[in-house]
Image 1 (cartoon, rainbow, N blue to C red):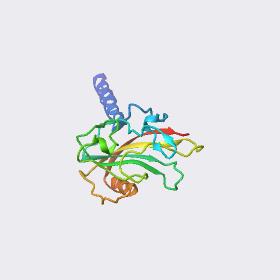
Image 2 (spheres, rainbow, N blue to C red):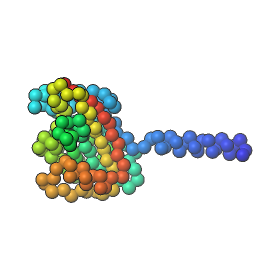
Image 3 (cartoon, rainbow, N blue to C red):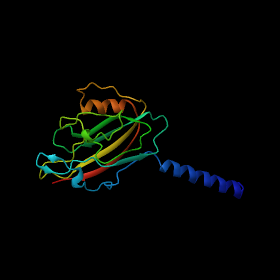
Image 4 (cartoon, rainbow, N blue to C red):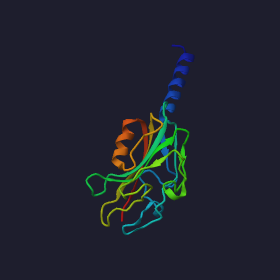
Length: 184
């Protein structure tokens, strides 16, 4: 192989590796991966005293064929036998690449108009922050954005977060997550 062809082959290989390494990703500026949540993302109630604000979320490089996004925040460590859903949002348009801080507050109307918040394990739609039991080990909070192959997931008004999760996974192309921890 000529030095030119070898050089060209190496450049193409390195270029394709950098594209693969730069796939679908989620970024939460206020939360470092595997870092501690701030009181901004802590629930205000059940003995917890936080601001109960959803953080700013941004994602990039969605896969081809993405028609909408969904967001979940899930605590697999909750002492329920099935974890705890802290936030579920579906039908986020494919043209969206970020949600501002406090988008999980239903009264502020910061989500795209097509988006729908599903009731969480707190019993109502919207973001519900971290609030693990006192003395429990720190819990993991998994923030996930899902790229979906459908523009809209139709759910009944009384749909649970688990049912929404089932429907999200039925339309999944790819997902990106950031995990944070919190304990008290």
